[in-house]
Image (cartoon, rainbow, N blue to C red):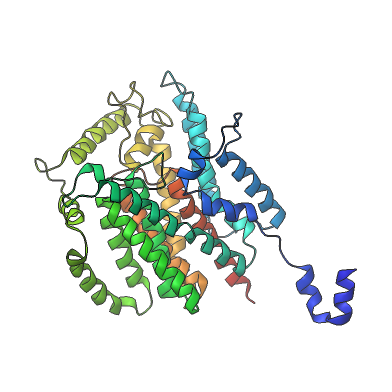
Length: 419
């Protein structure tokens, strides 16, 4: 009846009224809340039976994504590689049952990791138009001021003039550490930078993006993550280089980098200056990494095809020190063997090719172009960050990366469809 009345009064509006896509409110809330691990682990009631925040929000977001009616984007090959990565992870889970005595928690750990990966699918299925893409982007930046407030509050309690390991704070990542928090801020800062430099937008959007960059940059500095320092600087340089006509930005960026020692606290400069991998000059943290890598290399040599299985390296049967490899690539090889290593390489190569084509082919000043620029820098930083740790599987840290990748797939597909 309402549509009939509208047709009589405003016939041109009938198609608009009847084609409004449903909104995935569950995914919007999920995007805002997933990096705020301190809230849902600290305040979400323990209902048992798997009825935790992560599971319930994922189910709700998935059901509403189906209701939105969007489909996965075809043509890039990226979704296929993501499904292959998921399949290889399941195979590695099965392999782990044969190599460690207690693998009882492996299923839940993998499930949590794959929920983060699923954000690439949820984004494509839920964002059926450019407005929905922008809303999800805005929601991904919404938690940053609160996250910075938590970081500053924690930092105030442990701050000192000179650097100490007590200053490695985790912010809202209650089950993770400072390096993972820094990796999250690295992704948000570079995606925001790409959007700011590459997308024509109004003053409100520019203010939001500048605020996001500021919150993320301060957050990175106060996490004292040396790898993140290098990764974000390299990613920002790449964004400038990829931007059409952006080479002229390199000089101001280099000048700003040279001025950082004047602006940053002495503790940050001391942490940054401690970066070295030379034998005999490594700090304890770096030296330990080389020990883990040697164990991983030997284990891969003994099980080259399929490895010893998902999450096996932290078990005493494989690594007496029961610690992570602190290198994603070595961990894929030691736990998933050549199969997992080749799948990860294929996924990353396909991602890099898709980002390159998106930057080259997108209309300058458009949403797709800005998102492709920022995500290219974030992807390069991700590759760097994973040399000295796992910055790819922890769901509070990596879910937004998969979200951005899914949004870029959808945005590029919408551009290809035309107006």
